[in-house]
Length: 611
Image 1 (cartoon, one colour):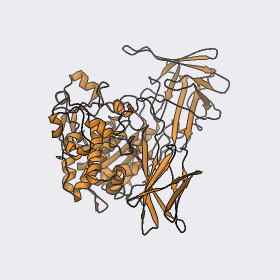
Image 2 (cartoon, rainbow, N blue to C red):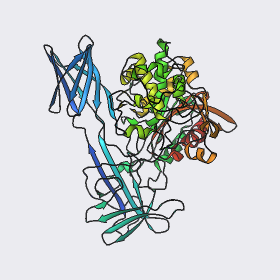
Image 3 (cartoon, one colour):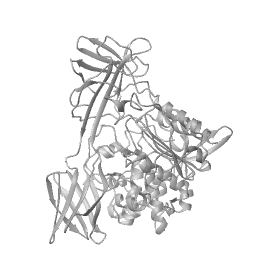
Image 4 (tube, rainbow, N blue to C red):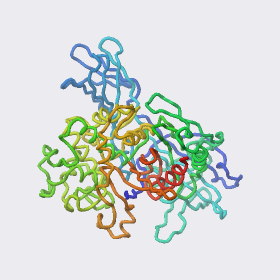
């Protein structure tokens, strides 16, 4: 029912690396010097990070961080410090009778991959509170997301004895175009060639073997990458769990004071042996196998208690994970939160009325006046916008890579109409982004600030990052970074009728309305042939930015609704089982893998574990 997104490819890389190694884990000694585990890694903190100090002397405000200074601009009680040239920005205002300076750190756009429109190239905003540090001084710590790129290479003997290789890039899931390659070597010259496959073009990656490294000509990189040998212990994040780790034993998640009651699975009627088996299967995943499951976290809550919390491939509970298109659902949640106190906006509000100040608009068409927020949240706006069609002018990658219009709201509103509103389904991230435009323009509130006020703070979120458009406005088309525990809170709040720990987030009626089916997704509604449809979608239904499915367990069918994003970022809510599940993952561009976790794990393992 959701599009099977294209594989991302990393580009523009630069970096530093490291040490020595042995043959890969589980491989017998092999005379070939290529056999073993190799890696390249670059990780660079943005230039501005660490302590940020703001001072006021009379009417003059200054900020200092990492040896850089900026003078503040004050307008309407708000402060703004911009550090040139495009190194970062702080926006804030005094709070708590002057004891705090509450605001946001704006991190400039980071290194991203060509063909990865999910936000890797976008700037990010994260909440930042500065506390009093003497008279006329406030201090806080800026913790931006680092720029990183990792490439693992495992060379081993396949079942047929052939020298085989698997490349793995966790940030983008760039695997060089194939899950496995055949390896040949002529002296120092090395070739990684795809196995002959009917209907697929051959791929060859060249390299040179030196005494202490393997220099790989990686597709999309601006120079060869030097991979060094690694022991399994030195490349622990290549594996689901570090090699040599103690056998898995189920344990209840810790109580961290973040709002989650925790307990053992048996306390909420879940079979702990079945959950143990589930986690053991993830730990046994071979990352060099063809099309492996790259699950980064699995969390399960039942009856309001968090009872399972496990992480893999180097992730942990402090890791803010890119939730990709699952963040589209946050726009629907924010709309419900605003409607709770202001009925002046809702699904039937018309986007061109709300965004009139951005006009006049190109490609005038009377049908544009009919487009509602309901159409935007169900991908039925009728605008010429289709993320599965490279030729569509509203395609997300086309929109994000063009530079003529930095305001992506205006870019989308200027698109021509392709269909009558409500008549065709076409998955379009720009539609979801216009929901953010409506919320921003109606509430006159910057979108990251609105998210913080209506969702993040009421749910007790820790550190998170919100994507920004080139003009500095919040992007609602997907990509916010959250920890897995915070990600799950959204599902739990909806499971509890719109309430989190006694605090109402959205009305119970909005939970029902937004998770009810409003559009069917099938060949007829998309206008595609069955073959074309199968290459882009899975049949199902959508609510208001929630994806609706059903799970068959034995003789029973459970209804579920979920927020889902490329790679395996999913909140899955099963109301009849009082169950909420979170996955985060790294199977980017492999919808055929992560879209099955709902059935293969929730349907086949977690729901049957209910006793």
